[in-house]
Image (cartoon, rainbow, N blue to C red; front, top):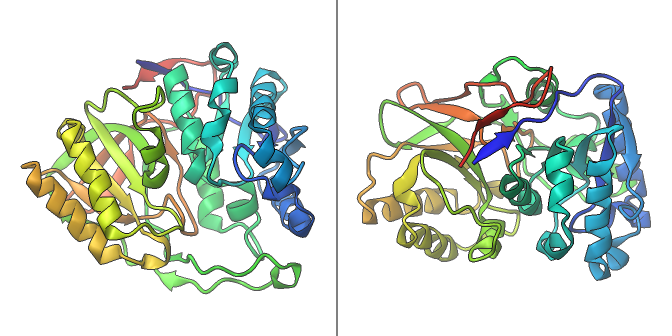
Length: 352
């Protein structure tokens, strides 16, 4: 399958914000945080923002009305004045919007769609529709980060969404955090405690591997197995995967990965990129499980790099779905060998 590549963002472009899962952006206690995220979009990235009609209706309303969540997304996609759609935050039930997706709109009005965690559902919808999307920051979290958006995240938004040049090296951030500070307005000027990153680690493999980026949050991908959204072709893929802030038990992750082996998916891969887990809980156990499962499938030479920052830690890079990526095991480096967006017109790249 080919993927349509959305056009690049430019300063003063209009972006829509949606709540496809949890509706917390519309709750009174989070209003200051949402406005802070919007202000950062406008001031740090020179973008104009539009909240879609139902996105701020609050947790209870959106939990009860998945159709309205889907309508917001479809309206944003159909509006040619809107150049990108950013998720406010993740949640647990984005899958409920599936029956209300207008596939013709997605194909006819390609544009940037970005989020992570439960937004994995949106990415798999885009994948099925043949549209590149972007695993990256969200309004209530990264954009509304206390004090300022982390400069690393800002650089990645500009590299992946504003520039048609090859993205290049996915350098690790100097520092990272997953410390949770309650979203109280009195905390807005308190920086979270950052820790030195230390670079990516090689779990196994050697040499250089290339493949196209596909993946998301493992917890969410499990919900999509045996649905129309789960990819049926993983050939020549570099699989990027992460676990959520729910911190799934190691035995659960083992069962998930063993099932990828039973489905023949692991044997199709060119490599695996695994994100630093939330609070580093179970980090060593996860790493051991990955190696154990790969060994059971006679894949001890499959390249695996760990400790990347594209999930539930701050700051974060952006992974464009379907983009050609390269893993260098000796250098412990990851590069994206093409642009994330197109500056002139929509064109196609090979997807799976």
